[in-house]
Image 1 (tube, rainbow, N blue to C red):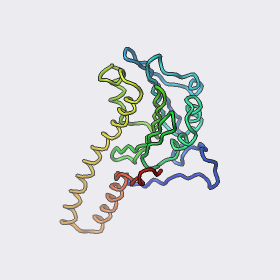
Image 2: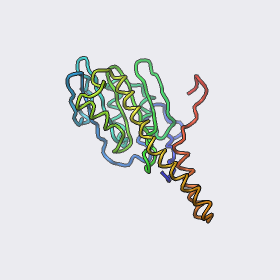
Image 3: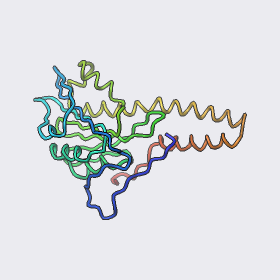
Length: 230
């Protein structure tokens, strides 16, 4: 996590709601996986861009679309068109990185979180909650969702018997749980650094302290504005 991420801004004057891949997205292909499930069954498969307009949750069940990679704005646009997602919510999905937040758009919800997994850079996770639909957006392969996927596949726990809101809760909970191993690792590094300062106060030690401070800043929650502000 030593490398600092820089926020990508649109060119001044760009129309709000403009969709563009962020600066670090690269050209890796975007992978979309769908889980269509209810209390009795779960169907998992990879989805092509051309299939997105016809996607829907099963009768009485839930559709989860997991989008891995943000290099192709057309995927985000297709999902927005299919589920009537506000253009500003779609823009926030691609606007990386930004502070964690929740935005309500009348009939759908946007949640933005940061996932921290040592020693990688923080990764933005965005979630859209609509009627019986959850869409998750992540920057790259590798996430904390596998326990949720396994519960869906095996029908364990409550997730298949509950609605889309419970799935969103489960995914957010998995992201937050991933913080703890990183916090423990950074705590161990702080203790080791304290011992090194006492034993060997050389310039290299102070450079290591600066690196550790940057990593702690990346993990520290960003301040929120007063109630009622964005």
